[in-house]
Image (cartoon, rainbow, N blue to C red; front, side, top):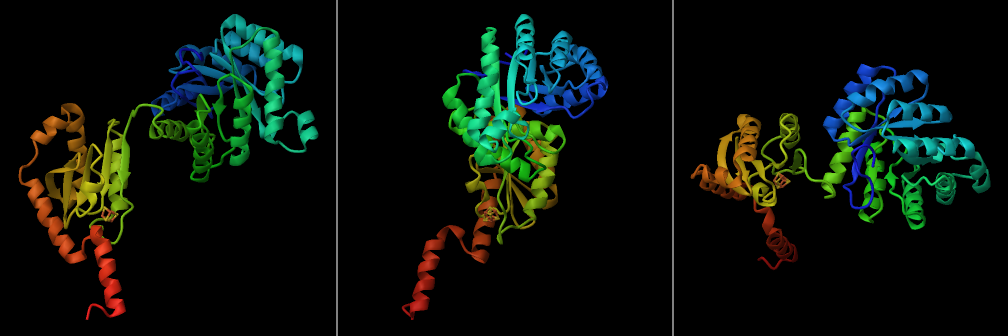
Length: 394
Ligand code: SF4
């Protein structure tokens, strides 16, 4: 347990993040903690890098909306101070807290306080003896560093442990965790360390974390982005929802990539809709499709969507067109219908559909196919092209 959040076993995979404020700034840190909670973080780590920070924790912990983990480097006494401040977890870096007696003292105090410890190995701060032995922060070295630390904790009967072996290179990160998962039974905290700013940082994090989660490895995750931590909490939560590990808590916006058939600027409409709908926090899947020819059919799995016609927007629910609105009212109509859909349910909104909408959409689809051709009859057209090319059409 990290406070009231279970980690490991059959517990839902949790999302972690870390504050970027000075911990001594109690109000600033609390504001960020609330923002992180709102963005989907289940657990948040806060640095405890000096006495002022430890004292800040004493005020932050009782007012925090999420369990707090104190991040400790070098000074084991700050771990003891953080425990005194009431944190729900500690993160120790075996690369820089190396004395057996210090680690055991922290483990004993954590056991007394009922607090869990993450053994947080990091390729960038690997134990220097192991670095010398292996010549580089290879997976075996990271795992051995974790095992070394775990042995100290187990020596004093401490087992409330989770482990991370983070690397900034995705294949090495994946290999390190695979190796670790073969060797230990403890819950694992996944992350690509120092992933960098988005979009590269997001891609690296998703590549490493999703690969492992889909192999059944990992219990809690953190995206380490060079960005507002709210972005990492949001991304972590979204990843878990997209992979089906957590229930949808907010909007899932799907949109076609647009093509020459598009009757509107799909990118602009999708951005406008995302902005308007995200503020609503509606737990539904919404589709923005560039044309009525293929849109409602391709997005029939979405709860609600809108497809562009010629100067119009065709609003559909579960693939059925329920209303036709002027193009400039597309986004407003979509948001309004999405709200009503969540409040009243699919059946009620389908029953309230404009009876003429399906026919209007059909007419427009036929008209556009007449102008542009039917994208779904490509095979027929390819055969006709081949006939013309070979002269058989004459
Ligand atoms: S829905 Fe229409 S505009 Fe969007 S990609 Fe498909 S065919 Fe193109």
